[in-house]
Length: 187
Length: 100
Image (cartoon, rainbow over all chains, first blue to last red; front, side, top):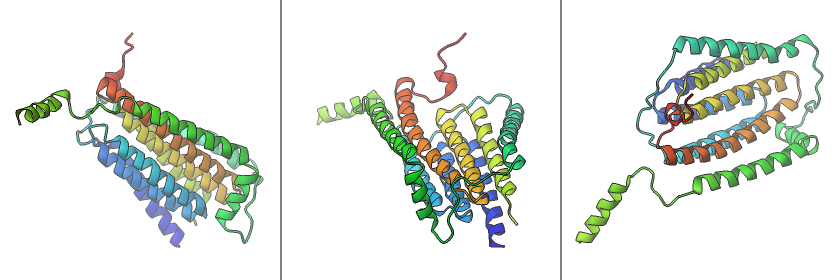
């Protein structure tokens, strides 16, 4: 009973919040609704019994990725509305819906057609986090290490890309700096 | 009772929302947001299949998708900052320099 109520509540709220993310003209509104939608998606994970995945979703997505977006928005002008030249809207909705439907059918077909054997079945009486840890550090150890290396490379790339010309201000133009200098000189 | 198909349908709806966003957005930062929406939709599908088939593989793939999304955001935001410094805008129509 609670599962049904939670499922429909979370789905309605998630769809609404992600529609705001996609449709809004303001970057701040879009980012906030994206963060809220990710919190609700972690609720889906908790319903499904994937506790550790839900916690990772909260920590990494809502904590790290949205904080990264918030930091990056200091560089951009976030308060101004985005002016976008929209092309044919109905065509875009039709194309998006149709291609998503085709993709879902493609990937759902093998699930419904044949009997799937569990490759790494969950153990009874063992918590989800413990179970995930056992499988992650035995069967998926090499992908785990490669993912760690990839995160290191991404961190170095982010620092190098964002760190170029860090001494120049982006939001204030050069004339504002000149005015400050003039005021200082007059004193 | 909530079955696997319910979760797959909600995942498909969220994925199509993200796809519509990718198709209609003109701002690069908003394109990144739409990509995050699509990645989250796929994560829901993986977790649901993992639960209903009693298999941990789906959750493993969801973890690796989260790791890939984190590194994608780190590199992508660095590139966005460089582009903004160079052109002063993130609009794709302003950035298009190859006109045929």
